[in-house]
Image 1 (spheres, each protein chain N blue to C red):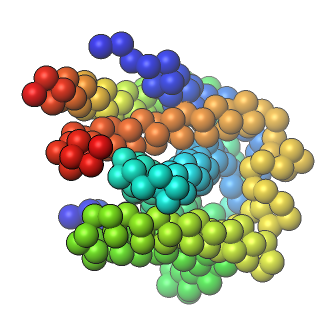
Image 2 (tube, chains in turn cyan, purple):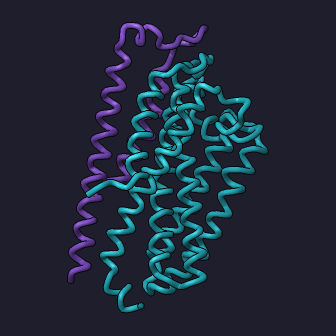
Length: 233
Length: 74
């Protein structure tokens, strides 16, 4: 079996992101130090999540147009892997924040209290919980067509809720998290040009890996649901 | 099981903040580590893990391809 070109490029880009991310020079910033290299991994999780959620809502709208169960399976799988990426982004952010935001002079629980009040963290948690509800909603409806239709509509709602929760509210409120004035990591003025050389390939690599895992999920499910799908057509 | 792993990761992040007791005055970058070449050890470990995981994904990919072939012949 030959791997598709985008799978090979995902592998190469990720190897470059890890090796380049560790070895290439980064700006020396106080507070952050070498942890700035987390940009190539933590931030990429959120970028990949957004892209996968966007693909998911496209398939949901396609389902509402055509009522093809294949589109529902695809929408669900992209949302699932996107949520997983989001959870990874959240937990890596928790580790990163505990080293750069936590005040070493305070006890850990005091720092934790102020970190958890961060609007960006609350917004991201909201977005992930809304997508969590998407899967609970799916599992609570037995009838396949009804489940597909209701969850496609809910997916449109969940995607639109991303905008206030992770794009708008965090920009209105003061936060320790970078990027309040614009788009974190995309702004040409606040990301060092040396870092952009690794960051963009890393985003692409992680997104392609997410898409690869999603296609595997979709293909397995299509085999499982083959009977229903062939009867339908 | 999954939720256990996740809560472990989160609590690990919280607990490690306690270990960080010293205040840094100047930015110290890991230059020393790079100059004596040991950072390459880290890169090797990371690449091994990454390639190992990707090899696993490739294996699953192959398996799914075979299943697709089988289910077409039925």
